[in-house]
Image 1 (cartoon, rainbow, N blue to C red):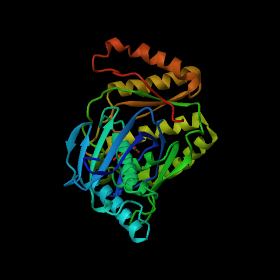
Image 2 (cartoon, rainbow, N blue to C red):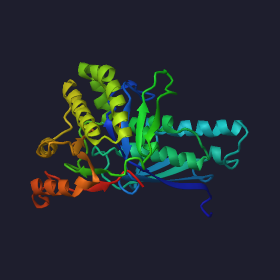
Image 3 (cartoon, rainbow, N blue to C red):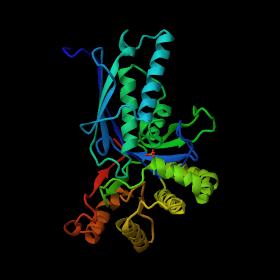
Image 4 (cartoon, helix red, strand yellow):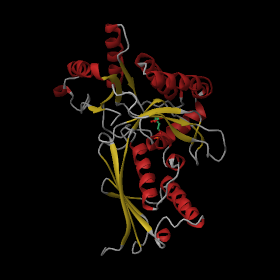
Length: 350
Ligand code: PMV
């Protein structure tokens, strides 16, 4: 065209919610974790990132805009993703497959990325963001390869958003990280009754980012070491089995226990890290009281590096549970302190 755009692509990537948490790196540069993890990728229409990338001969330098604001392209993890994609593109060329037009490799990129949910409020924005970046870059450079190991180098949890449905990130054992990959456990069609609700307890930015939080936890928490070595390997097996059998009570119990242990390792970190607030604690109590009332586990909560609750339940219980939440957290008394937006009904299925 008139601007000399040589290639352009737009893609979307959804958020994923970990039910067995990733917390702690054994290699900070390559983003290699100390334990495997497992997540559910949300439906594309719900919490997602949309990224457009263009290449042009006339672009002087690589540039990036996030939610309309230009950001620093020299961000190290962004650079890792760009470098790895360009490396694959060059390799493909030297293997004799043109893949893209002859000038494309030297072209600079302009990246525009927008989230349809609050950034850095513990809603895994980096996961959708880097998954989308890597997927769109691959599209622009004509690459068809296993990309989760590249997305992982943007943000660990991003590797799991490269697949739909139920996804495990296998920690791997190699020093070069080539075996630290995401793998689909079951597709998005596997468990159609499963539903996810997001209860927003605060849309503020989290005080401690996952990168520095993990670093301090690895340095100081012996509970984290125990968790990674002795607890998570057993839970991963149990969780995969619960997902495969669509055993909601088993899935729910493991999800809640793993969220609680993750936040316990945060408390065991020195100085301690607090991601949950009063509203989070009230939601935890409410879920247990609700399950107790029925004498069966109908609802589960999980919290990432922030106070917002992600609720798992089955379709048949959604409307009643929403009513119960509305009763205890009436929207008009929220006052910025209580639940702000209710609820995103995210079916992780198409
Ligand atoms: O990928 P990061 O650096 O944003 O870390 C994500 C960490 C948790 O969200 C707390 C857990 C997880 O497995 O997603």
